[in-house]
Image 1 (tube, rainbow, N blue to C red):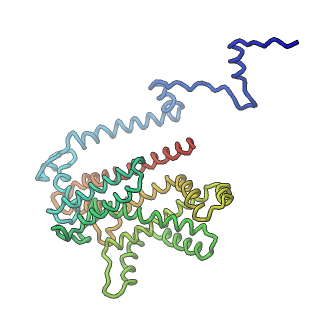
Image 2 (cartoon, rainbow, N blue to C red):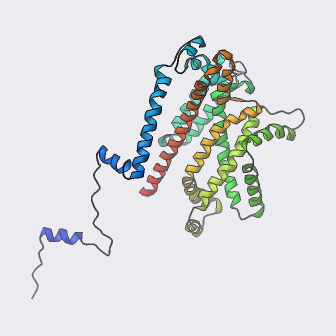
Length: 383
């Protein structure tokens, strides 16, 4: 005789579905609701006696320093003045110095009547960087855009054709020179650093020894020494009568120095890859270069983004050391602008102006690296 079907109420079915299966299903607490501002302050600023003391000390420091700084920088500042005597009579900042000297600070010794050329070159360069930052534009045509941008910038800076006056590189300076040194240094040093990092991990003794020797030699001396040696030693290896301008010598020194430091950052990323990734690639029958390019390097570079970007920022600021070989970068032009005796007392404003430009580019690189990390991490989670 057949058994009658067993009926269950909806509550019983719901309770059965909520039961854990082999410990895989566990009841999770609902997400905590976002607290109020006072709750956030209590949890983050006044959660303990040490945190409370630190918060009070920081608040007191801000109260002491911020109002006078605002008073000096904005309220009592002189924004426009042809005579520095007006600045000396005021108690605030003399931003009139920037009004009078900003073209020299930005463009250095470049001919005054031709300042529109480096200005346009910088604008094109910044636009190309902005376009490159959007992942939707990561297409093959982006490389063409950069080739065209660099070609137009070189044409604008050098001139000599299309009715443009020729300007030798010794007269380049200010912000365009700093951006050229930083951009070319980053673009050229990055692939070299990857080759050096792979060479340092190579199983071939000769390749490994050469990579280790180069990295340790360059990292063992300061950038000033590398720039000085590039300026002095490079002409010695050239045929008689052949010369290399200062800009190219500086670029060679910066590229070699940056590549050595980036190589260690890339090597750190390579060493953090689990051994199973290498074994899985070998099991698939991939060649060394297929395994490296398709599997190992993408993971290693993602891990090494923070130290790589940190080195980019450091190199961008270290371009100020090219003064050792007679090039006038942004910081040098800001300092040289103070050689005018009437404006010499207002050196703080000049250095603040240059520092703000350095900070803007460095802050952009730092924030963009965080964006890349979040994007790549989200892509890994989706996968």
